Length: 158
Length: 214
Image (cartoon, rainbow over all chains, first blue to last red; front, side, top):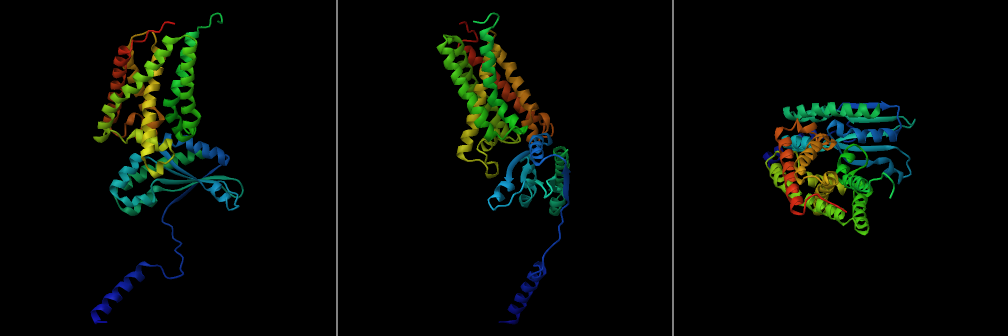
C-alpha cells in the first residue's frame, strides 16, 4: 500500500473513531427536557381528557399506540398509551425548514400509570429536541409547541 | 293522531336529527367523542340508514310530498357541493387553505392518518364530503319547508361560519376562524359556502321549491 493510501486510510479511521462511541460504552446523555405532569385522576380519565382537549390546543391525535394492549400479548400488565399529536399545518412549516424534523414530529405524549397506579403525562419539550436544527423558524415554532403541550398536559392531568 | 301533536313538526325534527349526524361527526371526533373512524360506524352510517328508513316510512304513510322534499334536499345539497368544490379546490391549490379537507377526512375515516391518503381513503373522504352536502340539504328543507328556496344562501353562509368556529378548524392549528393562518382562509371558506347556498337555492327552485302539502 502506498504512503498516500495509508495516510488516507488512517485519516478515515481517525474520523470514524472521533464520531463513534467507544465499543461497550453506553451513551447516557439526554439533551431533551423531559416534562412529567402527575395526575390524581385515573389513567382512563386522563386519556379521555387528553383526547378531548387536543383540538382546543390546536392539534389532532394523529395516532394512538396502545402500549398496554400491545404488551399484554407478552404477559405484561400495563396501562400506557403513546399519542402522536400535532397539526398538519405546523408540520408543513417545520418540514419546509428541515426534513430531519421527522424524527420528532408528530410530537409524542405518553400517558401511563406507574407501579403504584398513579397516572402521569410525559413528553419531551419540543424546543429541547428541535433546537439541534439551529433554525430560527423551527425554534419559533418549537416554542409555540412547548406552550401547546404544556397547556394540553396540564389540562388533561388536572 | 294525538291531540295537539303536530306530526309534520315531529317528522321535520326527526329528519333534522338524522341529517345532522354526519356533519357533526367530524367536530365531535375532534372534541374527543371517539375517532371519526369509530363515529362512522356508530353515528354516520346508522343515521344515513335512518334517513332511508324515514323516507320509506314517509312514502308508506302517503306523505309523498315530504318524501319528495327529503330527496330533493339531498340531491340539491350533494350537487351544490360541486359549487363549493369549485371554490375550495382552487383555493387550496393557491395556498388559501391549510390542507385538503376531504383527503384529511378520508384518512381519519379509515384510521390511516400516519400512513397518508390512499385511493380508498380519498374515495371515503369525498363520499363523506358530498354526503355532508346532501345532509345539509336535508337539514335545510326540514328547517325551511314552506319558505322561499333563497333562504339557502344565508343558510350556506351560516354553515360556513359554523365550520370556521368549530373544533375542526381549531384542531387544524389555524386558530378559530383561521386567524393565525390568514384572512384568505376564512374568505375562501365563506365564498365556498356562499356558492354552496346559492347553488342549492337554484336547484331546489328547479326541483319544485319547498312546498310540501300532504
